[in-house]
Image (cartoon, rainbow, N blue to C red):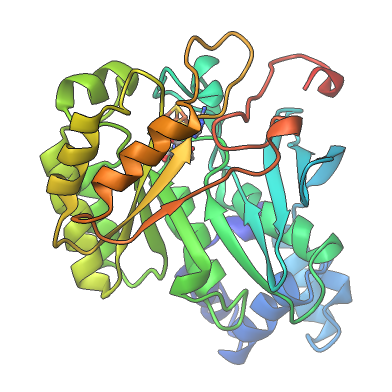
Length: 348
Ligand code: SAH
Ligand code: SF4
């Protein structure tokens, strides 16, 4: 009999199975704690679960894990890129960034991406496949097991490979587990999902009980430029209305990411339009100086241009921050992640 991968089950599905097996409700809590807090890889290690139930679980389910095939440490800052291998040998790129008081894990939602943004390395090779919920959770488990000391604060950002909202079933199921108090117990402030912005999906998430912060990659102030550099994007006003609705329903602010690309979206007019689009709205603007990669035709504006852009933006826009991406020397900065089909990992 084919065993079901237990980390792909939602909390509701786990509860249902426990009920169907005629077990008491607290077995669900025990199971979640073993899987996601103690992070065991075998049902036999679940020592406070009766032996015959452990055997039943073992007959019905498997427990998956991810292992790294390559670790690349940045010489410039405290970031490290990890390539994690799936059963089908595809590689998931993840990045660990160490800060004084916390660590941030940048995880992927897909292998590759179908949206083809012209400035993004991930978009260049297209989509290989969606990641399953267990593969999303196992990225976090990999870091928890090896690199994050117990009780150390850590944040998760869905800013690795892929578009989370094009794999929303699996991403949402994983976030439910990340939020759950018996599992990872991560609240809204600790998880950020970055998307190019699918208004329907944003509203769906806003109305759900899922706890996470939203970041929308805006990257342009006119629909024509946005469509040119982000062919898969929707129009700006629908995207921003949904981003605003998310902030209002969740009682937070939505971050708008804006990659500054020389001669494309960094003019004085862009800065003024960006201020106008966001003024008085529940947004935070995060400017990301473009990170280059081999074969890309774009470049980063010089410091003077970025300075002028910020100067024009600041007086009217909501909070503005500049993200100095980490790990650019190891191809781990925003937009530099890629998968290479059939290649050896040494090429990366
Ligand atoms: N698909 C999602 C999440 C992954 S990309 C999204 O696009 O939001 C994470 C962030 O990296 C996005 O804000 C994206 O605009 C940015 N990015 C992509 N390529 C980049 C590059 N070359 N330099 C800087 N940031 C980049
Ligand atoms: Fe995909 Fe995001 Fe890259 Fe665009 S920026 S290609 S949506 S990963």
